[in-house]
View 1 (tube, rainbow, N blue to C red):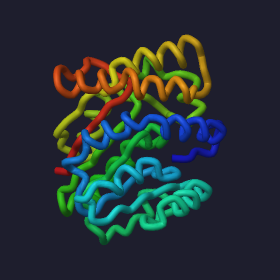
View 2: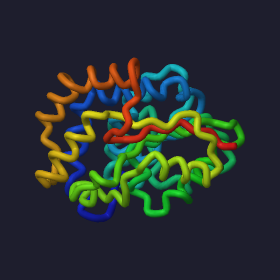
View 3: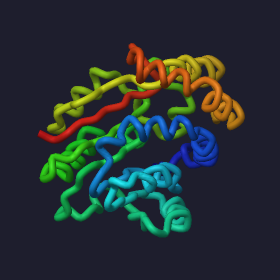
View 4: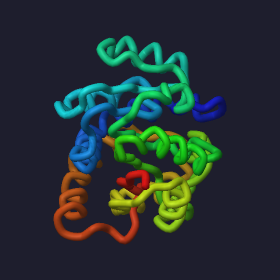
Length: 237
């Protein structure tokens, strides 16, 4: 999701890094795949990198990408003409339509009034008792200068996100930390060394050489006690 501040100057780095994080993206989609079906909203679609992954899920009947940046929205439409992106925000979605799922990856932290945003998600999902597939940055102690550059208002703890989801009227089916090793990599690079952009070659190395093993352990052996991100699956009451 685009922000009208220093975040904009870093978005090319963020998009370039995400393009290299192929195993990461696919692992994230696998975590949510059982719930991504029917009519799905993608929040903060950017230029369409996650849309490309979502478009391969056969169970999704209709996909509505939403992106507030006119520039990114235009690029998204160019990349994915089969899924015309809605330029705007969640308030611009037709309230008369019932939705089966909302997919929100690294967006909620950009929104100052995040509880109100979650309430809007719940309202759109309530008729079908659809599923919110939510992914956010975790652990405020590793909030770094690059977080501020990207326009992040916060990083979340489990307790914080659980409380906000409950207050918005959600019943939580799952809430887990994600990417244990990434927590320490973020702390080293962006808190200790104060780097202000991603190094694409290092993202590629981590995605190919380290992340697959980390994720296999997290998903098959033991969910981590902390992580770089939090993954939540929730339904409106």
